[in-house]
Image (cartoon, rainbow, N blue to C red; front, side, top):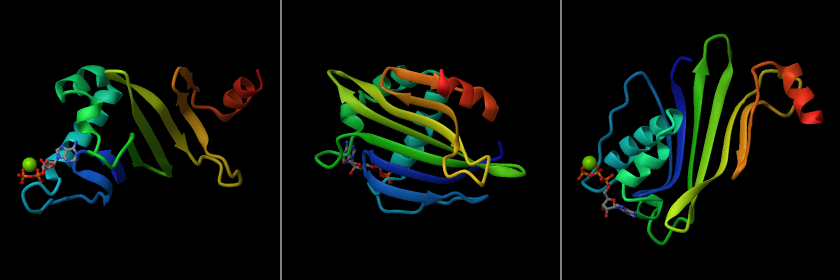
Length: 148
Ligand SMILES: Nc1ncnc2c1ncn2[C@@H]1O[C@H](COP(=O)(O)OP(=O)(O)OP(=O)(O)O)[C@@H](O)[C@H]1O
Ligand SMILES: [Mg+2]
């Protein structure tokens, strides 16, 4: 994996709906309260999710309900695309929604358009609430699992 290409955030504190193209150097300039730290916190939330520490990290941020853009967001959506050398980008998508005092992972997917002749991308991860599927990185294995 090389680096993030594009990040889309909906509902994270000040970032009601934000798209950011990542470059080799990204400089954030903006007035106080415009969302710079919010964006850095999105990155740390993603890192926490990738390392299995999402629950703890959200607790440190006082929970998902505190993070959601007040009065504007019912759920938090983060989408990123990541460059992969000599391949199509990986696309990761995470949607969290409040549940009681905590949250649930409404959707989590990791996909890649590995076969350009197919409309559907290959899915490495496809989770909907408690229905969590991880697929090994070979297309034929994925098709076998879908049929079973
Ligand atoms: N859950 C929320 N919903 C909506 N707005 C929020 C939420 N939590 C914090 N904010 C607002 O976000 C703003 C702070 O955003 P952030 O810290 O990302 O700005 P910043 O660009 O880093 O500012 P600074 O230059 O002062 O560091 C404040 O105006 C705060 O009221
Ligand atoms: Mg700040």
